Length: 191
Image 1 (cartoon, one colour):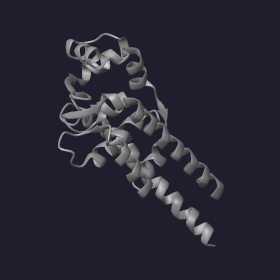
Image 2 (image 1 turned 90 degrees about the vertical axis):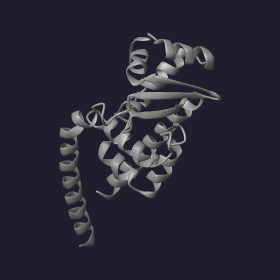
Image 3 (image 1 turned 30 degrees about the horizontal axis):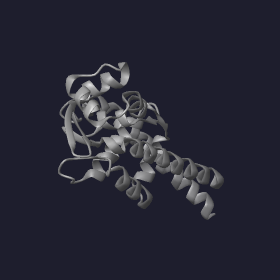
Image 4 (image 1 turned 180 degrees about the vertical axis):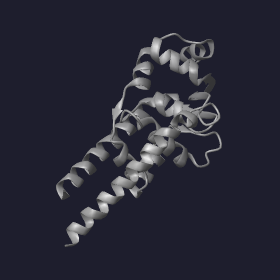
């Protein structure tokens, strides 16, 4: 009897969350407008810092063309531009519903703490909330997340990307995806 009640409660929660996701989907176009999304990325590499427009970073990731500030940053950092492009755009598959659940748990808090070491605000306040919002917005629609999408959906005017740890940030996203996969498998075992 308790298993049936648990399944019924789970079903109601999933339906409620689905409605929330649909509502969020309707709000996404306004939430990603310049008032709610990052316009600048401060690329940090050791002691170097360079501010780059998100649009310039997007153009670089998609076409390989670099703006002057980005070209200067790449030259100063000595990083391989193709490796950075690949890391920025390489997608990580996630399930939006499970992502939201995990991000609002103890395990999610740990993952958000790790990710916010690489992608964060200049004030370092509410980084976990900001990265959580950026991850959910990035996964909405296609159940995939990339570093570039997280930067595009970051809910502050400016976001800092620790450029010498960009691969670490991507690996954290992959780790989060693996955690989600294990949790989904556990949920399937109960159904």
